[in-house]
Amino acid sequence: MPKNRRFDEADFLGLGVRHFQAFLIFAGLSVAYSLRVNLSVAIVAMTDKDTNPDFDAYDWNEQTKSLLLSSFFWGYVVTQVPGGALARKFGGKTTLLCGILFCSIFAILTPIFAQIGDWKLVCALRVAQGLSQGMVFPSTHTLLSQWAPIEDRGNFGTYCYSGSQFGTVVMMASSGVIASSALGWPSIFYLSGGVGVVWAIVWFFWGASTPAQCKMISPEEKKFIEQSIGVGHSDEQHAPVRTPWVKFFTTPAFLVLILTHSTHNWGFWTLLTEIPTYMKNVFHMDIKSNAVLSALPYLAMFLMCFVFSSISSVLNRNQCIPLPVSRKLFNSIGHWVPMVTLIALGYVSSDDSTLAIVLLTVTVGINASTYLGFQVNHIDLSPNFAGVLMGITNCAANIMSIIAPLIVGFIVTDEHDPDQWRIIFFIASGFYLIGNLLFVIFGSTEVQPWNDPQPLPSKEKRNSTQLESQH
Image (cartoon, rainbow, N blue to C red):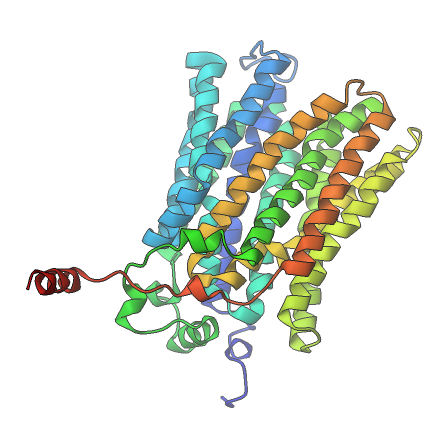
């Protein structure tokens, strides 16, 4: 093989074991998101006797349903930072496996718990599912930091995280059919949970935290990945190190990343949680009960992941733009295009529902560009602590996801008034504007000095130091 030839071009069909690992992570995130949204789609059938008379229906009011749907995030926020620390200590394979496996088991138990303890036990299960899934994103970032070569980092992240949209689309598109079939609404939980258990078994045997721990990988591919990401071979590489918590929060590039992630979630979750209500009351379209319309924005985002990834590959192959410019370019597309379309959505006539659907789909779909922007910037800043950094920013961002709908409820007192909804769209657009502007000005792709902290002294060294101090 010529010295100047990249190893990945010599792989069979251009694919290596790292791509197989990316596929497994994609499948895992697909399962994770199907488990996350299964209650959102199943609760309609669970509270409607007409959907399938052969199965129990529960008399849950709107307040109870809102409580159940939000309870997942109570646990989800709590384990973000610990999840990153655990992934770094035990490896991304272990924490991702535990997170999805436990969540799958809880999903399978949901119909039984609903029958035994009504909504209270279901609520407890959803909190437990949130706690287990809090480890998923930090684990994924930890895995990407070990498996993705620097030049393909954005594409690998995009492929893996597109699984979240794929799982959502599949669950939304199929749930209505499943609920009205002979299997009934309990099968929504049994099927999604069962697929999760199967994935966990496959991941246990074929997943790996690092190329060095993978038995399938060739020495050439292992060397290629490790040279790209700069993995050392000294004993200190495996020595325990202190997590530089203070340095995290005194690094401007990381502080900006927290703000960018938070502002992104404000806009994105305002869209996904409140747009169905907006469409129903202003345009008289109940997209929640229409599986195709409900899944359309997620489908658009899933497809756009591959469009933007292909564009990125071409730019990288031709060395058109440096990495910092690439990150900021794609992040600007993912934030500022939705900023414009959101404002436009607020001025669409109530008679033109088709245009509203188009704008909504474009707004959500273009968000996929951020997977090549701030979403992988944690790994740029610190490959060694990428999972911990993701846990911190995702924790802060999901707090914003909880606050955003509450602000909507405070401002929109008349759900039929388009002027009040316009204020919500301007606020979300403002967050998109500010978050990306800060990222463009202060964002960085340079590996931070604290990425390689000094190893903690070994037990022998500590004992030696103590003896010296005594003499």
